Every structure is written in C-alpha cells, then in structure tokens.
Image (cartoon, rainbow, N blue to C red; front, top):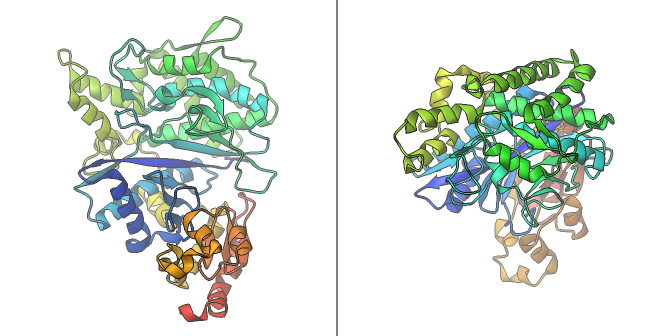
Length: 504
C-alpha cells in the first residue's frame, strides 16, 4: 500500500496439560535451538526478562516471551499480502516448534484475546506515521473509527449473561477489557483504545500509531480489511482531514456495540445525536475513496471490500458468514446450541476456543477454511515463503539477511551463557555483568557503555544490529538496506575472529 508500513504483535494463549509458561518456554527454545527459524538475542530486553528471552527470526520478525506468553511480532510490511502471510507464518512456526518440543498432544496454542477466566492476551497493531501520536487531531480522528471498526473486525466471543452483558455473544473479545479511551500505558492505568507510547523504533521523522483495542483474527480476509482500512484512515488524518465526529463516551459505545450482534449499532456524539456505526465508517470510507481511489492494488481492494462489507452488515450480518470472524463463529455456535440448549453449556466455550486453536488438527477455523475458502486470503506458497524470508521492500529484508550471516558465523555459540546468567561467583560482584544479566539493555549502546562485548557479542534490534562494537544502523523502515546488509554480513566472520578468537 502506497506510503504505508505496518506490523502486528500477537500474544498466544495456551491451554492443555502442560503449564502455559512452561509450554511457551519450550516452544520458544525449540524455535531457535531445534527448528532454527532465527537467532536468539542474548541480553534481557525488558524488565523481568531473562537472558535469551527471545530473538529475531530470519523472516524479519521477532519471537519472544512476554509475561509468560509466547509473543510474535511480525516484520515490517508494506502490503496486505505480506502482513497476512507473516501472521500466518508465525502460526506455522509455533506449530512446528511445538511438534519439535513434543508438545502437540499436551499444549495447544490459541490465537485469540481471552481465556474466559478474566484474562486477556494482547494484539497490537503498529502503523508507521509521520506525525506525533500525541497529536489531538490524530487521536480524536481515530477514536470514532476504532470504536465502530469492530462491526467487521471483531473476532467474537461468548459472554455470560448478566446485567451489563445482555447478549450471550459479543462481536469483540478485546472490547470487554478496555476501560479508557487514551493512555500512555498498556497494562497499568487501564487498557486504552489508543496507546500513546511514543516508541517509533525508527529515525525521528517517523512515529508509531500503537492500536491495542483490536481483536486478533483468524479470518485472513478480516485481517487484511482491518489493517487496510486502518492504514488508510491514518493517512487521511496525516493529511489534515477532520471527520468532524466527536463521541460522548467512546468506551461506553465500544462495549455497547460489542454486545449487539443483530446490527443497528449506534454511537452517541457530543452534540447528543446517535449515528449508525455503519454511517460512521462511511464517513471515513467516502473520504478515502475521494482521495485514494485507484491509487494501488491494496487500496483498491480495501475500498471495494470496505464498501461491500458495510452494505452486507446493513442488510444482514449473517450474509458475511465465511468472511468475518465474529459472524462465522456466531453462526457455528447458533447451529451447535440449537433452540433448546442453554447458551451456558460448557461445550460452547470449547467450541469457541477451538475456532482459535492454531493446530490445524484440532482447529475449528481450519476445518471451516477447507470448506469456506473466503476465510483464507493468501496462497499457501506465500505463507511458506514468509516462514523463512522477510518482505523485500522494508528494512526487514536487510535484517533477515544479516541474521543469516550471523547464524552462518556461529554467532550464538560465542555467547558465554553461564557467565551471562550469573552462575559464576566471580561475576556477581562486577556491576557491569550484573547489569547485563539481571536488568535489561535498551540497545547496543548500553553494551558499548559497559564495554561488555565479551559477554554479549551481538545485539539484535529493530533499527540496528551490533557485533562486537561494529554496528549496522537501519533507522529507515522503508529502506531495504540490501547492499549494507550484504557488506556487513561478509565482515561478520572476520569480526568474530578478530574480537573473539577463543570462541571459534
């Protein structure tokens, strides 16, 4: 999509006979050790992490543990085909690692946002923008769109009947956990619709729009439509367009829409009007059509299907069975429950969760996808390629190429794991090693400041890769860094031989 760049972060839930944290740890280890999908990143990168907590994949993405969950961050993508393929490639990588770890009959990973015990797993969308996420015009312009986007982007979930949840089924899983419209934090101080964390992971002319209100989808059609529409809306707002919409209570409307499956969704405005959610979406659609019609293949597909889906939702949401996650799942549950069976039957929860299991041998979604090809959007060959290869039109290409050169040089064998983890008593008193083993490093400059390349011989990051003090900077996410990565990769073996001669 022209001028657009995006990526997603998916936290996988886990159910089964193995403790979820243990299963996530074993799969993470298998991804890097047994299946060799990437290269482990030696230092802890966040508070609470341990050395070797995760690493980057050869396809440009990252797989790691986040508070006990296995999390996959996709590579930077510029096309809808790439983002869908890389999300699905992440599922395949997890499945192959689970098989290598001999966990396939003991632990089942699910791609959804709740475990039905009051816990939620995150799904974060990241869009490269050229204005500050703190800009009030950007925030105000995005809120009505995101609140109403769930009518086609929701993953759907069962809800217990109660005073605040009149429906037994909700459009969105994530909506029930949102408590505030805007916040600088992700977990503390309330889960927001828009997170204002200004962490662009790029040169300062770029910023990151960090959306954490959305559901993770199994339907690839829905994923493409969700990412495509949001990218277009971000571009509209970047250009200074104002939708002239202000919601009186975004969180209230978010939850109210989520709890209604029959259509006729509305939002309340600050001037005491109630507007159909489909009409709110059309405000953005019409402007996007006016500015971007015919621009490129992704834009054309997004505009056409955005309009078609809104038309179908206004006529009868059930007509989108096989396209939208929440509709497809809702129809399956209604057929299973029947007229005389209570919607509180525990088997309905199992049915709901089975839709989101990524193991095709037990996944309801995969069963449906064989019959309803609309749920799948990219060819299997593209997904297989995305398991091993980065997009060719972003800096992920240069990252993947450099990672393969590091792996070929045996970089991970140069890591003194016992020292890094602090097992040797003679390291415990040395503050620089304690810092590396028990705190976290923000980037390669922390290692350089502590002169600790003997303990951490390389650092992998989104915008730079450093090897024994030599650095390949990749600050522009739109650049491929092909030539720079080739030259840097050819020098890696010499760097190790020069700086770490005793590790070969």
